[in-house]
Image 1 (tube, helix red, strand yellow):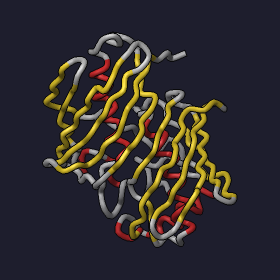
Image 2 (image 1 turned 180 degrees about the vertical axis):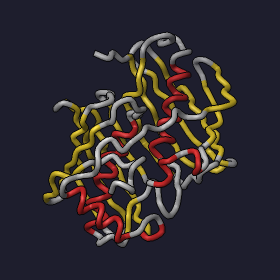
Image 3 (image 1 turned 135 degrees about the vertical axis):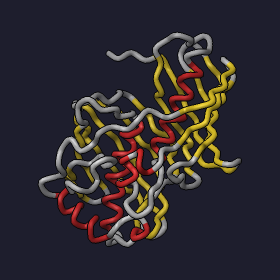
Image 4 (image 1 turned 120 degrees about the vertical axis):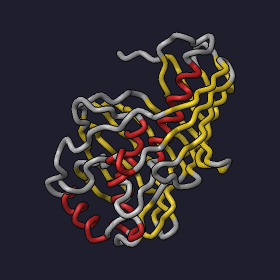
Length: 279
């Protein structure tokens, strides 16, 4: 595990597997950028370990749909996430699950009704290596402090109409510039959907911070719903991102977001942003 899964693996140890419930832990390293979207990634990876084991490492879930993700607390460096995934269905077609992440015993994130379509595992990674990794996670656990953070989204060509819309071009890094591609995935590099959602969230926050009546207020993304990842994004791609403001008031802004590549739909979601206090 030390030489593998160093840059985009968010399960340190699996502590329980019983029925459809799987639980685990992940400690955020100090001094790294860890977007809130990676809490959902961590729960998804926990569910994926359970699904891959159940299907004898012949298939693995990749991308998919999520009904809703609710953010209650933001992660901070050094904190430990207690992860929980409840598998509702797992077969050769898909894994369906919901999950939660807790920080210091308090609910930080809820992932509701997520579905990951199954694809041949050998196209993405070596089955024998993943078996060994699972053995490590079920035992002593992975080496700590593996994650070195991810860069903030590289957004270019911003065009903003406050109170209405914002658009930008997202330049996806090349393999040589982003270590996380070695984990996601060793045999087929794919830009993580959670990082794409983080870029869309960042764009949405920029628009809300310029739009009355929330202009200048401390705000955060508290809900992402109707998430659909429709296709894989390769390293080096350029994506067109757009966030449209649906409505905004003193307590909430709602937006519709989308990513496209050469006019082909890549992803879409709904985002809610609310005033936020760090306390």
